[in-house]
Image 1 (cartoon, helix red, strand yellow):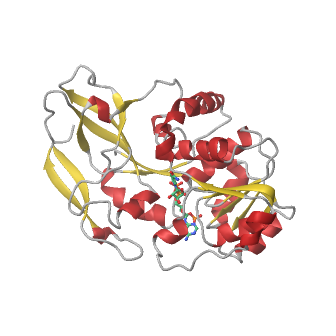
Image 2 (tube, protein in one colour):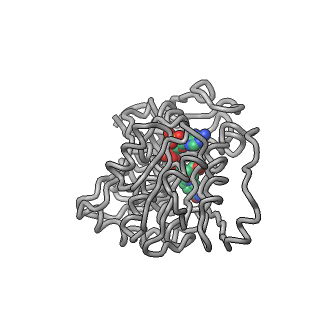
Amino acid sequence: MTETALTVQQTARPAGFPTAGHFRFAESPVPEPAPGTALVENLYWSVDPYHREMMDGDFELNAPLEGRTLGRVVASRTPELPEGEIVFHRQGWRTHAVVRREEVRRLPHHAGVPLSAYLSVLGGTGLTAYVALTRIARLREGDDVFVSGAAGGVGTATGRFARLLGAGRLIGSAGSPEKVGYLTEQVGYDAAFDYHTAPVTDLLTASAPDGIDLFVDNVGGDHLGAAIGALRERGRVVRVGTISQYNTPDAPPVVFDHSDVVEKSLRIEGFLVSDHRDAQEELYDFAVPHLRSGALAPDETVVDGFELIVEAFLLMLRGGNTGKTLVRKA
Ligand SMILES: NC(=O)c1ccc[n+]([C@@H]2O[C@H](COP(=O)([O-])OP(=O)(O)OC[C@H]3O[C@@H](n4cnc5c(N)ncnc54)[C@H](OP(=O)(O)O)[C@@H]3O)[C@@H](O)[C@H]2O)c1
């Protein structure tokens, strides 16, 4: 175990894209667990788009940040958290955390499942994709599905789950030709496009000339307007995220034909995964057998070294990731 603990703190509020200058690493002695608590050394950290939203106000300045993380209990003063146990908790962005039993989730032991998957396809990211398709969209066999932000964490999980759940044609959008290739060659999308190359409406029409039944939207903006135009009767939009606006708060509002919503009997519904934690076991039941059989693979960009956590976060915001962005203890 290292002697010094490191904690990332936000030092200033960004206008537009954040930089490394909005953060600092604070050093302190490794904390001692008090009675009833345990000391966890963190092993994997999740960096997420919602952290960018929190930088605008919810993250307190010059204080430890929150984030999903996996760590090992290295010293314990409670029998409920034995040393060596791997736990999930939310005291991310730091090397060490002192936790109480009620603040952690003990990880199930699914043989053959890599630890990182509990922060990617089996974690909040996979749960978001699973809830989007099953509870919100109520995916039907044969539904043609368009996913924006398709090469990211939620987007790759959505594509892989949709395929396993019997979706019809799968269309994805992403930010580079390499990602477009990854979607069709690795993830199982039937068609994909780089949204930088032409108006999204034109690209979507070319990829889905007969329209779509379902749009899973991680991005918002032009993607949302284009998809509403492409939806068939009784089509559904699942609003997952709006990352096209997180760093550009002055972006113009989305333009679409509002009469489409009535005339095509569309349903547009958003959700927060935090309201669906009760689906976690259902996700394990669905996804773990597929992970074990090889029918499902986690898509991850893993950055090695806690000291690179800020870079990993900024990389993700700029689209440098494919799949879920994770940081691993070096
Ligand atoms: N509702 C919920 O409870 C919930 C839970 C988890 C996540 N989310 C949302 O789901 C979305 C995806 O999250 P994630 O964790 O899976 O992140 P991610 O997709 O792995 O990473 C973010 C991606 O956003 C894309 N992006 C950045 N700027 C963009 C822009 N201006 N236009 C289009 N795409 C842009 C980048 O990919 P490109 O290279 O393709 O641009 C980047 O890789 C986010 O909007 C997030 O807030 C919502």
